[in-house]
Length: 198
Image 1 (cartoon, rainbow, N blue to C red):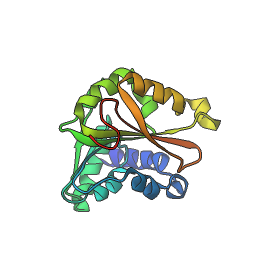
Image 2: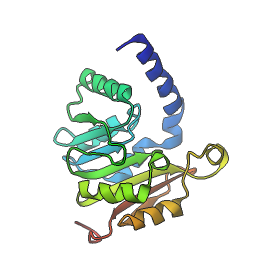
Image 3: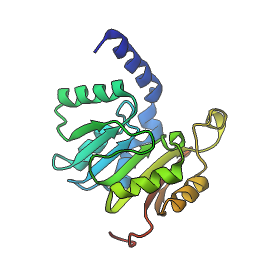
Image 4: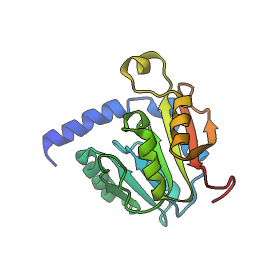
């Protein structure tokens, strides 16, 4: 890895995971709310610098698998390097296709943290994604509320709009959590899945 690439990754890490992010975003509480079971397959869609990726890998345990999906090849290479260094054997990386995640295997959970607003034609995107979910599979969406700087820069989504788009893609809301005050945290399942199970 070149020095320039390392600098670029460090700069992205500074902006993606600033000091105090753990205290503000409560990642351990978010992971706990997902109730991930050992052995599950989890996708970190828009994994970035891996802020949640390694936590998800720990949650699924050695018999599970986590797929880090991102458009930034350098960040994926860095995740692979860190996984090898830290002996995180259940982490894999993959590049998405332009209009879909292109997952290599079916998932129990697809997790998005501050990524939803970046996706194109979201209803169609998540309709295609449903084919990559196992029976009872979930899609967890964390987004900034539309307020403050998030309103100015557009890095936020109205929770009602997320629900409408997900419903039009064939999902229903299964849970909503209020963990971080300025963020929404909604979990969806396919509308055809029975409540309480696949």
